[in-house]
Image: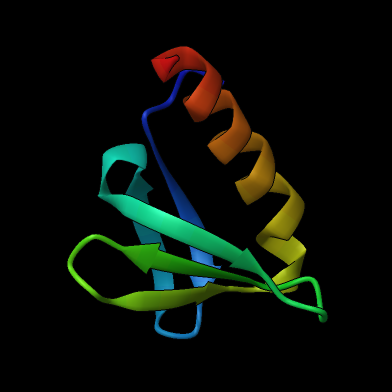
Length: 65
């Protein structure tokens, strides 16, 4: 999982994130994830992409540590 950018299904379509753009994430009760970008924009990642997103996010955090 060495991709720095991955696409995830959001309410606006397929959205590509880089780890550096992300200010925070919030896991919601319905297994969706709110992604808060440094720009102030918030995207909701659909539940079917939630686990994949968390795996990518966790991996990216470890690589940057």
